[in-house]
Image 1 (cartoon, helix red, strand yellow):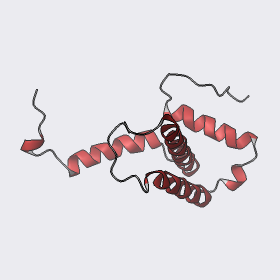
Image 2 (image 1 turned 90 degrees about the horizontal axis):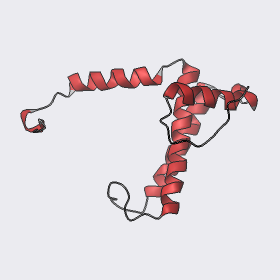
Image 3 (image 1 turned 30 degrees about the vertical axis):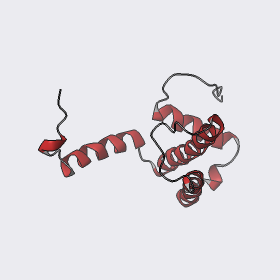
Amino acid sequence: MQKKMEKTNKDVPLKELSERVAEFARVRGWDKYHSPRNLLLALVGEVGEVTEIFQWKGEVARGLPNWSAADKEHLGEELSDVLLYLVRLADVCGVDLGRAALSKILKNATKYPLTPHQQIQP
């Protein structure tokens, strides 16, 4: 049975997101189209759409304070498409994206250790 898609203010675990995206695809018969290659190409296309949003804006401030609500909503939709394709690609490839990301952060901490001037002062 398909879970109800509802808006909430709670954090959504990657596992739940992955399950919902998989179910969404399954009930529509899209699994046959969701090969790793096809999902990767769709992901790249969505990244291109995010790129278009920023293309002529120059440098922008954190939080996008000068953007309209509509522009921010559009960005959120396109970033969501990127996330959903990434989560689906990881699932189809058998990669636990959450664990892989945490592992990568640990590897990067070793690869790029803090220098003395980067230490945060209390």
